Image (cartoon, rainbow, N blue to C red; front, side, top):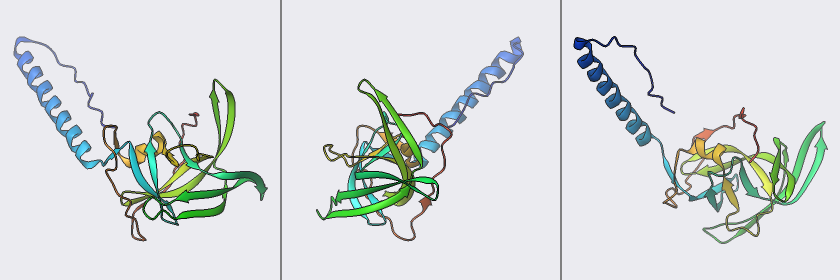
Length: 200
């Protein structure tokens, strides 16, 4: 985030007023230019984009939801178990490829990254999160996904604020601004632990 709020203490005299106004106008012009340049450098994404789940390259529709903190991925038959003293989860991905119509079914085992606690009017629910790699645009991202059965939802993948902030800017008036085009040479944004562990 760009902060353009540096303040200077100015002695206001008859001669100093003009200088103060001139300095303020110059600072505002510089700040506006810097913000415009920053916006030009960041990619803009629509509220629905296509992404691929790696390493299988299965293309799915992803909803970018700024109202959610953590991303979510459609997972079935979720089972928790212990491995080497750590909590792990076994789950099944069953995803239909948007481009080919083929269904990919894979049973995965991943170490639990976080234990997400969701509170609502219906009570409290707990979900494990795991690190998965996705392709959005021309970049690979390692992101933290909560696992839940999303078979009754329109979008098998939801990208929350933690992921959106890695992507760029969100334009809620647009959809499908980028096609997933990743290969072995694509840049990878590795997962970094977020200090903010608040729940959705």
